[in-house]
Length: 117
Image (cartoon, rainbow, N blue to C red; front, top):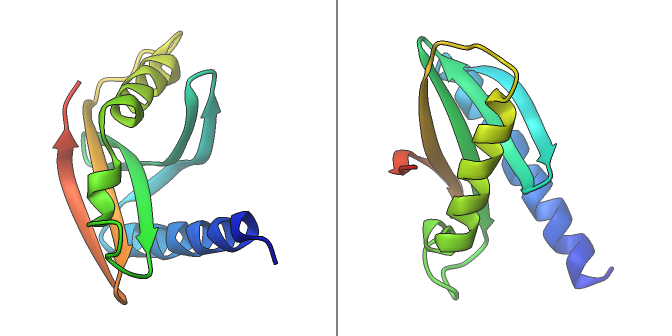
């Protein structure tokens, strides 16, 4: 199997684990793999008055650093623009948050407010 196929399977598996984690912790999944002109948002989930745009990073090792370290400038801007796109034409009264979920070394680390707009 090609490397891209392996990465895709790993990413999809990590997203599934993240969704189960979120549901177990009281979140409702609004969207999964939400496509926009700016790119794809892995998960959009709500809990109370918070709507979180969540990037899931799955790693099998720390050879390339911590998973959250891969979410930098361009990726953050993509998520911010995707959130603006999500709200265009909608009136929703929520607090918007940008989170990262690391699926790593058999565990899950949910970083709330990982970055701001």
